[in-house]
Length: 462
Image (cartoon, rainbow, N blue to C red; front, side):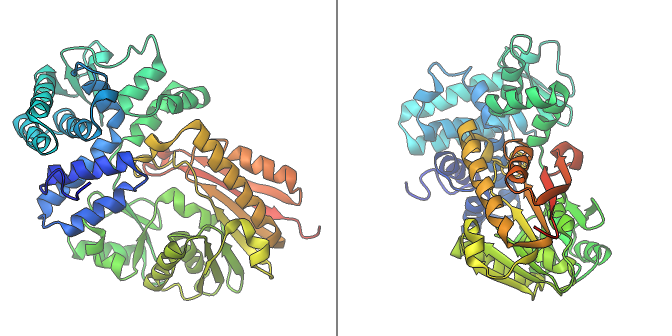
């Protein structure tokens, strides 16, 4: 596909990004940043493009549910590029307040003219105009029929003149999945584990527009010092813990001098806890098994006051360069980036480590608000595959932990297959390790990210 098949204006670029992300394994954030860098957009257009990309990807399930009520054919029979135009237009109509309906519809029709025939333009125009006419109200009132009220977050709803959602009385899972744009199989899992109230909270948090969380780098500054620097550049941070500040809208992170100068790094509250639990000390040898992009490895060096040797291992040559770059930026001078397979730790390292972090690749169900495309790439089979890899990585780390040493296992997942069950299986196979502490962290509890942590200690003697 040509780069600018859809066009070069904000809505066209957003449609292009969503189309590629939904059809490939490309990460939304990376592709969006690349496209914005190549564009000549001003601040307003960059913000609009960003909102359209993240919002449309995040709400894809709901958008398909609604759009499907206004077309006369199955969505599977709509060309992917045309469906993406419909999604983007419907997102503006249903979830945005400052975009006039006429602008959303007319721009969608204009983009459709570039990818199809006159009939395609009429199809897109007719569908979106019918949807626009069906919108009755937007606000805090849901009305009496939940099938007509789309939850927009923060107690707001978009009420339509006709039922577009499944009946919650007939299938709560189907309703929640459609209303809150999550895979139905995942909602069913959560309902069985957490019940309705917590599942609703998880779904709502998964559609939140999270701010940017910055973890202060204590090798360079303090939280108060970081806050002062951010305020000096026109940002107004909110404290979200002793080591974190949140920005509602950070703009381009590349424009934040505090990030570029290594005063802080982008890292969520829950994600930061793994290194804290491992508690590296000066003089220790520490291993981060799956280190890229390096935030946790740099944090380990920082927590030890820059006096612990931190080996950052990752299988990707490209990503290990990113680890090294972050280490230089944050002043983590005792960081040693190493390219290697985390499943082969015993072969790679002759000397044992005092402390080992195994922060594994996972399903990302604890960070769906940030990794907006992940929910549509998941399946029960995919979770089983990644759980098997996680257990191999954890088992491979065991031999390189010295007697008396510490091992932290962490994920950004909410699924027991990847969390408690993995640790229980590991401890059965490695009785020399004992769980000292474990915790499930739900995203609504942090207002940001979620995940799982387990701290294990190896017996002093075998």
